[in-house]
Image (tube, rainbow, N blue to C red; front, side, top):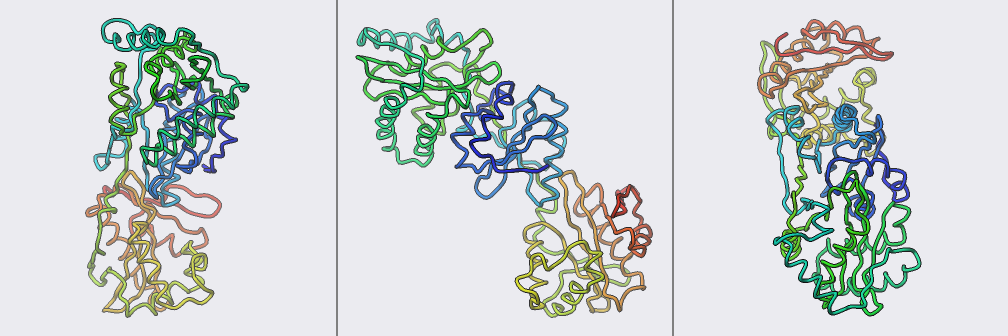
Length: 473
């Protein structure tokens, strides 16, 4: 899977995904992506007819549930597995965001009990029956009907028109007035939203959006814009002039009457962003559902490990590599043959062509701190003789193991003994279900060592042999 930056020019091409979506979540829409694209630095990919979206927020990456263009749930499940694999291979913490309720239980079961699930109230969408907005029926909508009737009585010359490009300058001027009032809130999200409104206005047709303007005495007093997403009309913009009583319920009703079709069962008026006044207003319109948007963070048992363990065998001790062993560790890392079979070239990250010995030690300690790997020195009679590592931790209790021994200490069985000890630790203390390994095909010594440590061959490609072991083996 190859993620690329989502440019605004790309969004129009993705419209088929949004028009066929069935989540009832407004985040899966062209308008939402366009308005918040700069704020969230969204990336995207297309896999198996599914759209993968990934936002950056507070330094982390959050993946949306894959969105099938044709409603293929099985394809969405397969692509969710690709997201998991992508995160594992690229050392990205696996987070899902805006997960629909019907997908949550499957994810929790997939990743086990060690997941953190949140459903932040201020981001939940308000979903309404479309007919309720068209008619404002019954006692629960008496307040809205009264406001509309008052507006029509106060402004008998009112008109509602479909928005078109000829109204751009006038509509923008109206929105500038609204923005001045909204700026009084001094809230980042409020100003970010208005920035998005101004930028989306000239792009509405391109994005498959439509709008309506409400006039009183010939002047625009309210504006609304939205798009079709599955069986709902998503209202992205709804603004009214302060002091014009009844403008909001009137534009809401007339917009629904104008644009709801036989296929439109629901109106999604997005979230309230935690604004108390907005929340009260949205609740007064009697939503049929406040749509959950679950965030799910998958935890690995390794993530909770704060200190290096110390593991003893008959002859060896596996522990944190000491500062005084920096020179020997650097020699281990610099060894050309070992480095080639290790599968990682330290030169890719080195600060110079010939870094100081201490840098190699700092590098692996950083990986442990970031929970990318568990590197342990192999000690024999107090002397550093090699390194054994658990790394490439997955999200379903799996990890990869690797090890290397200094040339002068090879041939004594230290590699096998270290592998067995660390695998036992991984199964018992880190609750791993599966430990994997790979080695270059020409590295026949490693092939023998992995097999002698109890690992079983499970495949090969042009470059590597692959092995695995479970706790039961």
